[in-house]
Image 1 (tube, helix red, strand yellow):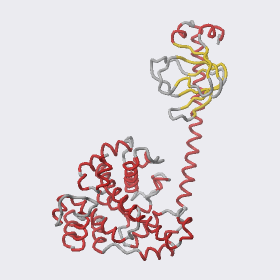
Image 2 (image 1 turned 30 degrees about the horizontal axis):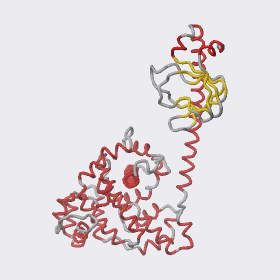
Image 3 (image 1 turned 60 degrees about the vertical axis):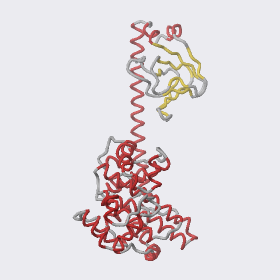
Length: 417
């Protein structure tokens, strides 16, 4: 390369440390020859792609024709660059331009090879980390949830009323109809009482009192009736401590979100997902009881996975196994890919995970929590190519807002804001 010719025609820039030569997305206006120092190429997030040194060219010959820079260039220390814009390039002469093109082609080929090799190494490392995380988390319980200490605590937790357990059995029986579920509520005084007490509570803040099951069904729908009956029964069965009330109100939101997510995607049974959402954190209550009985072990117990405890409590209540199994694996989306979840509950687990994330989004704002495997669980639901944000904003949220008067007041207010 005839550097003397280039030096005579193109300006030389002196860059201070951390100076941006150009940014990702900026229109390409010149190519740059690094004469002295080092420049780091970064992606749009600021992550390092590679470092280039003296003698390397930065940029390509698009000059604003075909698109912007794919990366940013930042000086790592004092640096000097020679910049060629379109006008200077056109004045170089055919021979010099051909030599420059050949050099740029060779250099870009080498960079692509380096990036490809780096990408492969990162992918292997990522897979190894994912497997290590899975093995660590999956082994954390080590049978603790089935230990004698846990069994003794579970035995002291009041069971759900027989009538509520019967209602749940019908909800998980695919042969049951909505009419049968409502008839069960209407024919059982305890279920009727539970329903009417719940729907008229301050939690929902209805303007007019509901005094019969038919009116409740008209207002809430078949599925809404069971949601209220189950939530009120759960509240009666578990100790009403501050920790329980925190879990309970969060579970009410998650239950509604799981229900709406199942409806919006056409995947799973909405009433079943609603039940799973309501019961998914009962293991945390068992964990609190264990801490109360064993205060010296509080630090150790804090590391335990509450999902297994919740599943064992629900099994002790003789609830449907599909419900128990979903809750047993509910934490897996935080550290494991969908293939590690049993196939018969993976869609329930995925919908519950999304509902839990939507609950946090509503109360803490978008992007409040990074999900390492959200895309994989969306794909397991057949929703590849749809973003989590679009699913919530375009499908789930509108369904909830359409029936805002039947939602808990705090959830309705959070959605409206």
